[in-house]
Amino acid sequence: MLNRFLFTKIDNSALLIFRMFFGMLISLECYGAIITGWVKRNLIAPQFTFAFIGFEWLQPLPGAGMYYYFFVMGTLGICIALGYKYRFSMLVFTILWAGVYLMQKTAYNNHYYLLLLLSGIMFFLPANKNYSIDARLDPSIKENTMFAYVKWVIVLQLLIVYTYAAIAKMYGDWLDFSFLKVLFHGKAHYPLVGDLLQHTAVHQFIGVSGILFDLLIVPALLWKPIRKWAFIASIFFHLFNSIVFQIGIFPYLALAFTLFFYPPEVIRKIFLKNKIAFVKGDFQPPSNKKWIVGFIMLYFSVQLALPVRHYFIKDDVLWTEEGHRMSWRMMLRSRQGVATYKVVSKSTGDVYMVDQDTYMTKSQQRKTASYPDFIWQFAQHLKKEYKEKGEEVSVFVDSKVGINGKPLRPFIDPNVDLANEPWNYFRHNPWILPSRIEDFSLEN
Image (cartoon, rainbow, N blue to C red; front, side, top):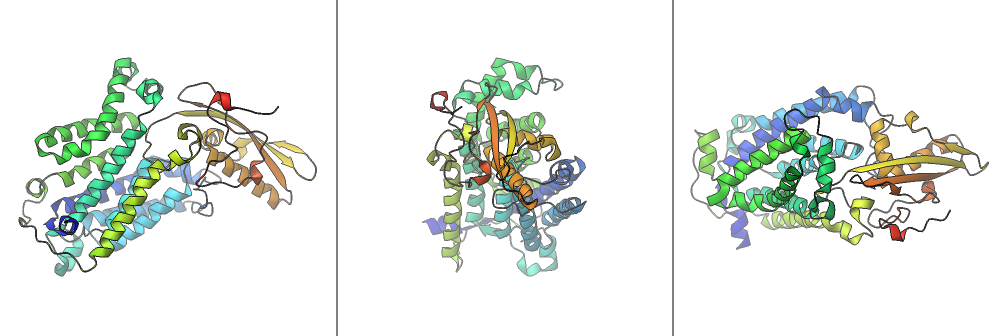
């Protein structure tokens, strides 16, 4: 039964149009990053970037290199949209985007992670089999069908994103709307909607509807009687996010996903009026079906496991941030912090207070004040710098953090030499102080 469900042939109109939208959107994302100054702020202006731990060797190209890097990615997006050398373009874009994702996390965004996953998925999908330059140059590849698993892989990925996003919102500061008050306070200057966003009733509506939307949107789009209303709700939800939060291409990418929920005749009527209809689903499993099923099961096992890993790490992820990334915990908290870094020479005992302005941009400093991995990495950077000068040092950090507008509290144990501490990838780092006030036991 599973084989028939996955390997029945269906019309491929949704995939073809999604490829066009996907290519155009990633092109806009990359060209826009150059035009808006995102590349300069995050990859050119900093002396160094905070890469994912273990990928510190992956630093931006020197000079104007990253402008060319993003221009190439934007051009690959156009090639993907046109279906020109699709596999090659998709593979190269995925590798280049993975590089950007891993080399800096100061401007981390869950949507960048989703784009990485989708790029990897799209490489394997037959999205260039029609209405593409590839199909025009080589008519032998032209097809009007795809296996059903192509559709369901996209739908399941979307379901995971939304479901975990809804579960993550079910915590105190979201449910009592206090976080939304903090979130929208910074939007008060917005024309037309700024004042409206400060009302408690608006916070309550957005808080409740945000959870309900995330939980129900995929099932609602799958159910034909209410699909139209679910699509209208999607338009409102994603345009609101685009205007208020200015989160790049994601709202429009999310709307493009709805292509996979509509019958192919609807897609053809709107976008591909001359496309030959495919009405009968033939069951034609490929010879490598076991490999396909195995890969799909492995991929989604990882996708289901990553967002729950923080439950197996000591303390609250809202405080420690351990297990936060790659977990679809989107727009859930606001962190404020202050930190001082003290370098102590092991040979002379001399103490140096670090002037962070000489090392980092203001955006990076906000991260090294309140995010534990940034704090640890900066301590390691200082250790390396002094070692290159021939001096062995210890690095101590005094950091205080407040979550969602709450008062600042001690975050990092100031008595621990972070230069001498390893980073625990899958366990709690004990130099992060506990989230509960009654658990604090600092020695003076």
